[in-house]
Length: 295
Image 1 (cartoon, rainbow, N blue to C red):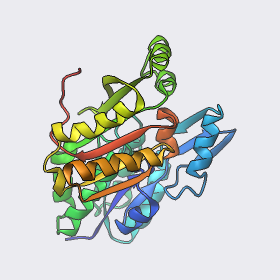
Image 2: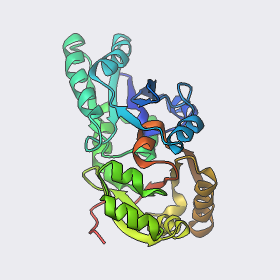
Image 3: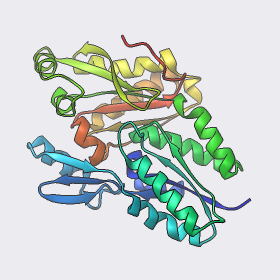
């Protein structure tokens, strides 16, 4: 069995330390803010998480760019030249063209390296949901799965990674076209906080509305009881948009209520944070599939 590398993109929002420990090859997306372009590096070395969220809290507008074909070609070529295969697991195709860029790059690289195997998988996931899928995929790789077997496992199981999140400021969803201006205004006036999830198509879907921040965070924890599979045996991931205290409170509640042994917490990176805004908290866990009725 040929050796292979798991590749991904920076929308996985893993810490740089974990990505290196998992031996991932990571291709960055780009955020544009203050008239400058910054690669969304996992270690925050191009633009720190604190600096980024400070800028958008101060009213600076941020836009984002997907990783392009050339970015993936540059990342793939040295791996293939070393005689290794690639399994690339990428940000949801419903939210970015990054997966399409990886797919096109893979086609080009197959011509250049005809003996290589290059697989590109649409994670249908985002942020640390993508990160959790990668974490689990690496465990399967280390158990001895071949590249083909790993791709099959990811395709069969990726919709078990449940994504639930809430935002603090509805205006960012409005700017992203996910909420009407009127709903954002009246929601803010009434302290209404939406609870959203990522659908089986990899799209962000509003599921319910609750009154107040505390209730919205509790709603995330409640979803584990409703949908989680053996939560006490899981590793769960939480990411936050510069609100670590609240993320840690959610983690402690998960441990107290369900006996979750391990919860990893990290920032939402600038690319995804540009669209969710500061104050977002998201929870990711292994559960039933995502085909849920709208509430």
